[in-house]
Image 1 (cartoon, rainbow, N blue to C red):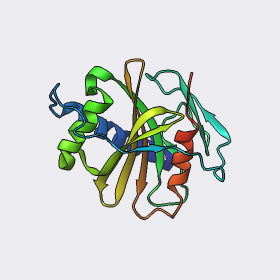
Image 2 (image 1 turned 90 degrees about the vertical axis):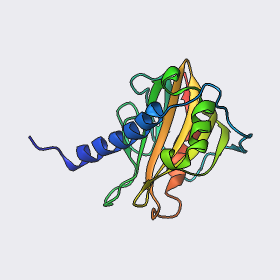
Image 3 (image 1 turned 120 degrees about the horizontal axis):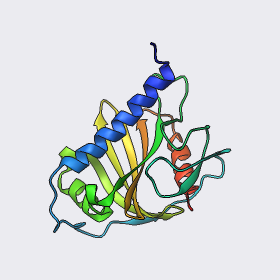
Image 4 (image 1 turned 90 degrees about the horizontal axis):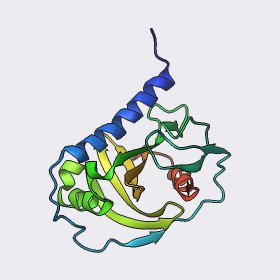
Length: 187
């Protein structure tokens, strides 16, 4: 049995998101951990020049949601945003019970206290937009591979939208992921 190149990339993207999620679950955390200082707050703005003709439905295990995408996808799993690249970018949404990770505040506090283990770079920010209040973080997975995460809580779930991309992506490439998050709808 052969697996198509697209299916291999989809598996790789799901694996990266799953590994990042599993690492956060497995690291010990204290109930007393809280975000050490208030995070900066930014407002998410849509990018009107980015076309998002497709609606993506609720991924398995997530609260009812939808968002717009530049490419067609089945329920938010491994949306490949770049084409023809040796290093594709992808967008994915996964959900976990809050008791697996703790609250968004607890997870972010852990990441900030354990920057090397969590691969956190830069300063997390609260984003206010269509997703509601979410925390945006940037993870450096090594070899120029980055994951931008949006972390939110909904109906007892930790909802993680992840944008898997590279430090040498063309200027403006992240606008598509930003526009997808800006199109978010809870149902």
